[in-house]
Image (cartoon, rainbow, N blue to C red; front, side, top):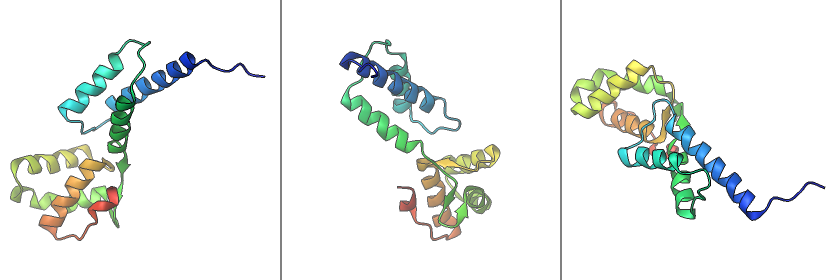
Length: 138
């Protein structure tokens, strides 16, 4: 019969999994973490190995994991199709949105994180008249 883990051992396994998840989120290519999220993830990864994460920290990590989910489509449109649709309207956008569309095109993005895809969909709805369901990425 396999030996049962002690409470301390189980907590350490959970802490190691937490740290690994936080590190993988930090290393995501083309992530869209705001400064607070990036700093929080960095701080959590640097904690001492024996640190046991709290329920609140687990809740924040779970929220960030959901923000890291990638999408390749919205409704019947692929991310590259949406970028191609928005690109001709980039000069009609504010400076931030114009830079965003140009950055997505430079990346050759084929998938985007939830906030990124919502932003792209919002631009396409406003300027290209596409009827996209923004809740599909909820």
